[in-house]
Image (cartoon, rainbow, N blue to C red; front, top):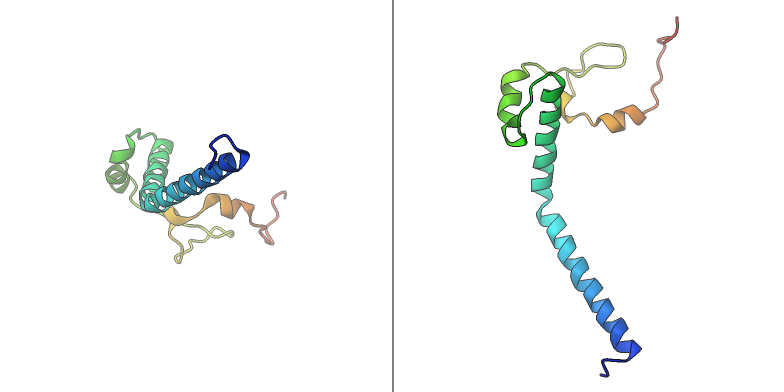
Length: 107
């Protein structure tokens, strides 16, 4: 095949896209567990920072268990939700929910 032809250029580009895409997909799936663990450590680090404890990300799990003694998830009425683990709450998802309540915010 002539290396200076348009067909060769498009074939080369298509092969490169497929190879690089496959490598990126493999890397993303193989590193998923490490990424999830890193997000968990970062969340612990941010919670500790909010109470004035500054730690490195790798020390966050040990410090988190020693500093944070109790975790509570609250319902919209203020009562404790025993079925939900506070650390596993997705705050972005919870804030986007449309809450229906009888509580008046402006009395």
